[in-house]
Each structure stands twice: as structure tokens, then as C-alpha cells.
Image (cartoon, rainbow, N blue to C red; front, top):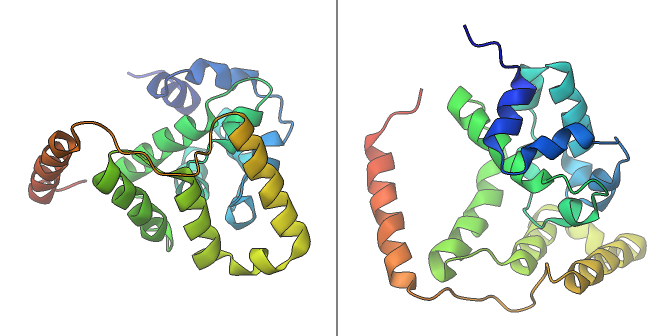
Length: 192
């Protein structure tokens, strides 16, 4: 019989996840998230649900799917909790459980996958720009929102988290061969 709690499983599955128990519920993560307004729970809300053992609520939440992997929350967290990595863990668990049919999940993952396939890595400035242009275009025309986004971008650049030009990895052709093989395998598998 497995006596591990859902919280423990998330912590164990996430590199650096043991820091999650340090969460102060300060709200820096949600306040710095460019897609926080679209999430049904802010990251700190998800962490409170995790701590309370509300597994179904966490796995059916849209929060991990709206994460654009910009790492703004992680860089601003005073406890150095790997929030973005926890979101990846929750996505994996949700997929395994069959909770991945969120209306915008594909719209967020397609540009990310496209950058990885084309360059071998994500391009955060491109992802954030596409997100706001296609899902929150009104933010570009509201001076306060535009100012907030600019300040967040400047802060991320200062922490070397937002390169303005996409970079390509060496030996991209090898990665593309691996990705093609993974797609072929995934096409043959059936997820429960």
C-alpha cells in the first residue's frame, strides 16, 4: 500500500521539489505571471490545494496549461521554489490521469514545440509575445498592462532569463532525429 501523499509524489517527481514545503503563500508567483489572469488558480493557490491533498482539483486545473514557461515566478520566488518545473510535473501527472483537454493547451504547447523542433530549445520572448498577441491582445493597448509587461521583461533580462534572439543548439539534426523517433513511438502508444 502506497502511503505517499499527492504532495509527496509531486515533490519527488520534481527536481528541487523539496523546496515546495517552504512556500510562504506570498503571491510573488501569481503577481509575476503573465498568464495569471487566465488561470483558475494562481500557483500559490495550486500549492495550497496540493498541501490540502486536493489531487483532482489540482490535476483538472488549467493553471499548469497556462504556464508559458517564462520562469518569472521562479526567479521572483523568495524561497527559490522551482515553480515552473512543478507546473511541468503537474502537466505530466494530468496527462497520465487523462486531464489534458483544456481548450488552450494545444495553443500554448504548439509554439513551444515548434521552437524546440526548429532550434532545439525554447525561446521565451517569442512564446510570451505570441501568447499576448493571440490570447491577450488587449494588454498591448492598455498602458498599465503594457508597462507591467515591460517591467517584468526588463527584470527577466536582468536575470538573464529572457534572451531577445532565439538560439539554436549544436547538432540540431540529432535532436530532430530523436524527436521524430519519439513521435513515431507516441503514435503507436495508447495513453490510459
